[in-house]
Length: 173
Image 1: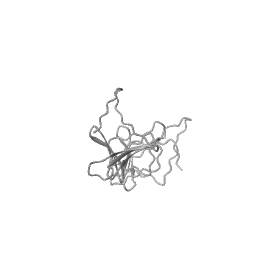
Image 2: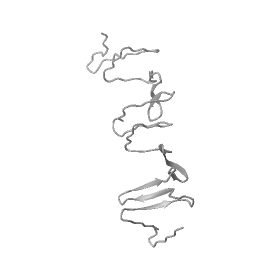
Image 3: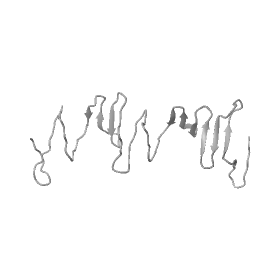
Image 4: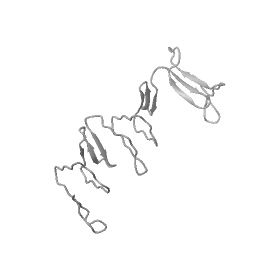
């Protein structure tokens, strides 16, 4: 092993070369490296010779790499994620400090459909795999609601309370 004691309370190993430096870590039977730490002078890499690279915190795996990609165990917090697809075996929470979260498409690719909920985990909108939409709570529309047909299996209420100008807001044409 290597022992280095420094008077400033931090031990260090310094390597340098005209193009950068690297440290190869390997077991005694390896003919090359198992893992390599490389510095290019302006950045660096951690390279696996053939296997996965795993980052642990207190013995628990938090990030692992493989030929297929990366796996994060626990929560992932990010200001921005740019991805062609995000796959999760659990819930995906989209949140924003602005007035909206911009998404292109949200797909449910299993037999459970898609549930959109509130911060206290109450389901506000459910879409099943037949594209039927259910909303267990009230729907308030502040603009125009256009539909080819509206079907209700329960009570259907129209509020014809006078609008701000004192005129009822229900029109049947």
